[in-house]
Length: 437
Image (cartoon, one colour):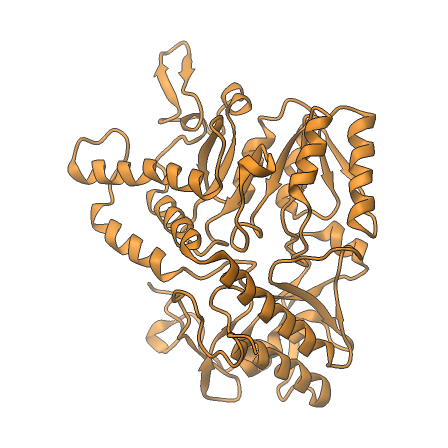
C-alpha cells in the first residue's frame, strides 16, 4: 500500500488555508477541500514566513541609501539568482520580473522579430499576444506524435521566429515533449517559448538540458500568490525591443530630446517593482526545490489516479483528454457529468460539501471547442491535497448522480448559485468572509 493511502494531512509543508472552515447551505461548517490549484494555489508556509520577515524592511529599491532600502534591493535582486537556479537558466538568459504569465508572454510578443507558431490547445495567454506580429496556428491531431509532425511541417514550410507551446495543458494537465520540440525548433532556425504556468508548480524545469529559449510562469500558481510572475529568456531579443513600459528604472539617462534605455532585465521593469511579490516567488522556488522530487511526483500521481479511478465508477462522468497517446500529466482532471451543467455541479460541490473546483472554458476556448464541449469541470491537485479530500470529492459527485442535490440552484447573472444562499459573504462585521482585511 502506498505511503499516501488514508492520508488526512499533507506530507509536505503547510499551505495557507489548510485548516480553513467554510459554511454549508444546510448549516454548519466543514474543512475546505481545495481542488482549484490550477487557477491559483495557496501560499506555502515558507512563503508567508518570508514575507512576514521582509515586511518590516519593505522600502523603495535600487536608489535608496537607507538600510531598509538596501535590504529590499538585495532581496529583489537576489531573487533573480534564485529563479535562475530554479530553472537552471543558461548564461545568456536573463530573469525579468512581471505581473504574471500573461504579462510575461505579452512582453515577449513585443520582442519577437517575426511570426510565431502556436497550437490550438493554448491558454489565451499563450494564444492571443502573438497575433500582433504574425500568429500561425497549427491544429492539433489526435496523437502527440502526429501533432509534432504537423509542427515540423509548418516550420519547414515557412520560417518562423518562435514556436510557443504550453508545458502542461491547463485543461487536462497533459504534457508535451519539450526537449524534443526545442530540438525540432532549433533545427528549423526557430526559437521556442514555453508557457510553464501549470508546469512549474508540478515539475522541475531545466532550461539548459531542454534547450528552451524562453520560459514564463506565475507566482500565484506556484504557491506565491502575491502578484509576481517571471520571464526567463535569451537576452538579445529583450535588449533589442522597445521597453515593455516606459518609465523610471528602465533607463540609463534621459534628456528633453531623447532617452538611453537600460538593457534587460531593467529595460522591461519600469516603475516601482513588486518587491514583496518577487520575494514571495523566490521563496516558493526555494521551497519547491527543497522538496524531494520523486516523493512529490509520487504523491501527485497517486492522488490523481485515485481521483480518476473513483470518478470513473460514477455513472455519467466523462473525462476530457487531448491526445490518445499522452502518457503523463500534472495533477489536473477535467470532466463533465451527464444531466448537469458544469456550473451547477461546481455550485453544488461548494454549497453542500465545501469543495472548490473550477468550471467553465478555462481561458482555452479553441481547445474546448475542439474537444466538443461548451464547458467542463476541472479538479486540480496540489501540495496540500490529501486522500481525504479526493475521497470527499468522489463521494460528493456520486451522491449528486444518485440522489441529486438537496438544495435548489439557479442561474443568476450568468452563474449558478444556491437559492437562497444563507452563507455569509463579504461583511466581516456580520460574520462573513474577512474582505475588510
